[in-house]
Image (cartoon, rainbow, N blue to C red; front, top):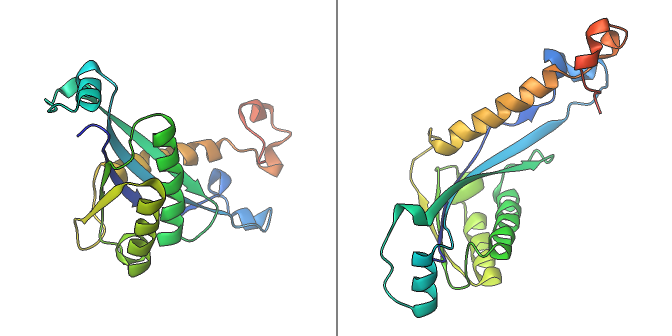
Length: 190
């Protein structure tokens, strides 16, 4: 119903920074890693149909123009992909949704995840969900839909983002190409 959101979250494999496919430790002795958690979000738009339902308290009659699908990507330089990191990501996402009136207090977040115990299914994850529920005054309904890691719309989104980052890193200037005439299409490592 209006004021609710539907989310589907999943982590991508940790992304290593290796410009041009080189081992970064070869040049900088710094093996930086990037954690990526994608989130597919469906929410209601403030159409006349939705606003009438919210303000007048009438029955909501579904229309395909009333909903919107967005993808959010949470990036972290922490190597941890656990319940605490996921909670930080959800906190920033929920703050954004409330700031833009995409969700309302006492609404429901319908969350679907894979069966990864460390991130979404452990007792710490459920405790932190209850903390988020109280903080934002919402109901969180989590569905764990596969026994392990599966392929879904979020996995596809994460793969596209990871490929984009790899393409950017291939344009990173390595120390030996600074004097190269083709170095103008490169970006500095920092």
